[in-house]
Length: 405
Image (cartoon, rainbow, N blue to C red; front, top):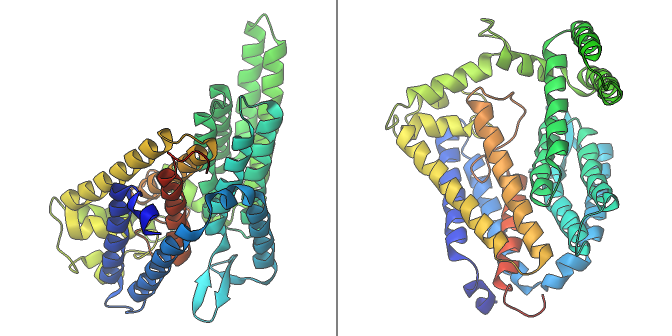
């Protein structure tokens, strides 16, 4: 065990440890006047993470590859069990309760989905056929569907991070652009009445078709766009909750509803701006201390960091994240085995996507959908799952010079 740990990338471990400890400190800061238990619970999950770190050194690396599909299938069964018999929190039936401990299986699904996709890409030794791409999408959409059935749109959204992985592994730029085109249509359908969008698209389509000579491809694109609009309208009315629609509209609207749907983002911006250059100091954040900041220890903990440590503290925190991303990219690129290479990029893409989405969310550039800040926000399931992903990445990296994993 010690011989393997000595070969771990120490810089990545230090960066991970720094983020986790800083997160515990900030959880204490946000809750010390309201609850003394959250930071202790996070310490407990930190201890569980360290225990997993040592136990995983005894696991043969080949087992991760051999059992990848089985582990993924088992995680889907747990998601179904959670949907049927799980504990509901804020309208999401996505928790399993053991006494006072709550576990969110959807957080671990990102880990098992990464294992399954890494195994699938590992089987494609030379190139990726359409069949291989379909298998990857089946794994991904199965994961997303099981999360959406639990009404947890935020967790489902994080699985878009795997499209970054697919892009790294040769997914066409056209496919990426089509995905963003669909997301733009979804935003337009949520913000504006569907009838207005349909009339506008039909008018523009008729004018464009009149000006074009080759109309076959355009007609196909036009019909696809109309179908996508109807699908987006179905998603808005049947998948999104009313507060999802309000939050998306709140980002793009200029209304003055400060006590309604824009309350969260308004308090978030006040906390961020009040920190100034050096911050108000540890335990001195007024927005945090007096309960104005919503979800201060989870989704909006980045705002409490801004308020208490200011621009300088936030700059240091972002620098630590950037160094972690750089190290994970370096680790991924030096792997000799494709499974290890893919899984390292899965770890990088998931953590980067969650970080970018959370920061964009709290500064008002993205709708509030409930994605925690990796390793900083309170949440044992998130901390443990992302930590295990880093540990597996480091384990394979320690074996990169071995003949066979």
